[in-house]
Image (cartoon, rainbow, N blue to C red; front, side, top):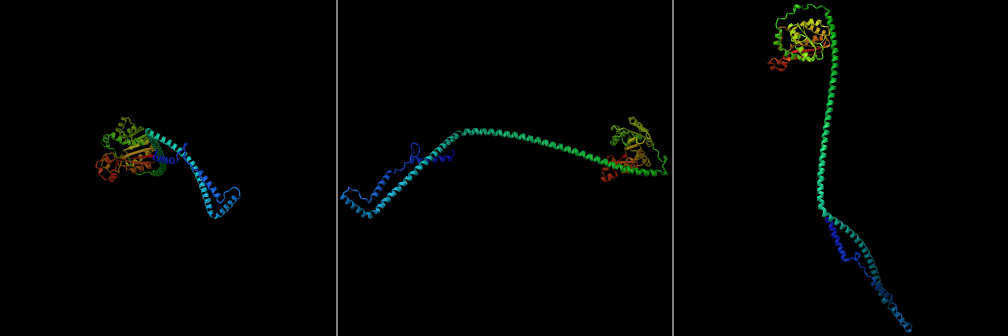
Length: 468
């Protein structure tokens, strides 16, 4: 029970004590309120009214003359005194009326007190009911207060258990949620990465297909233009060839080759076979897919060994009996033959690849176009040709390698070979500069970069082309 309920109960108890003190309870337990007794007042009023009514009236007497005379005198006297007692009569009547009004008022008061008593009884009954209820509530509150500590301890214990269980469940749910979020994130990342990879692969594939298609279309267009140019040039050459050539060079004009041990010379100044083989191995990729490759001027057979390692069928020719014997000892398919005589005896389109390394610089200048023309005759359409020779744009070769070999005739510039190839129906011509001079000659690194690249670039160049 709180402080406010206790205060209300105390006030109610004080009111009850005051009512019981003034109005003691009867046997029924209700307030014993005594009403005023008006019977004596009523009797006094009746007597007063009878006296008021008798004023002015003569007392009756027995019959007779004397009594009759007395009565007459009394009446005369009463009439004579009427003016005197008139006010007394009115006062008496007013007093009686006042008493009657007081009686009526007291009766009304008694009735009001009776009604008030009835109301008080009903109020007391409601108050008793309310007090009984409050007493019951107080008893219950007392019981609750007595058991509150026990209930509180039990409630706090259960609350602690529930809180711990709730926190455990929340932690489990958070862990499970975090695990699911991690799995979903991983799956999303994996799916995104997979889609990205697929998209990248598809994009690369589409790009490669588009590039391949574009290059094929460009190659077709280029081939058509080169074929058209080649046809026009062939017509022009046929017109020119119909005219006899005056002052044609004879065999006597060709200088005789010097007598020397060229194998020993090549070992000292060209390089070891292993070194040359590694250098020429770069051209094996150009002849992949070929079924018949000719090495014109095979020398010690380094290129043929590289082709054998690459699994490409190839054969070689060389005018040196010593070189031919060396190649045969290695198990290579090599013939000793003159380059021009051999190419003239070959059937047309008998090879799909022709390689010529460090040969054209040994030939007279007027025979190089003949070599290109014979190469075009023995190659199939689409056949590949690769020619490697010293690079005259590199000034270092004139001070070192070129004139060191007495069999060298003159260097052949790359644009001149490109022209010869175009004249004889070759297309897709490409020039690669190989063997940088700075790798073999010290001191070139000290030169300015642009000057070094322009005048001391690569010692050799390789020109590749395809027969249209």
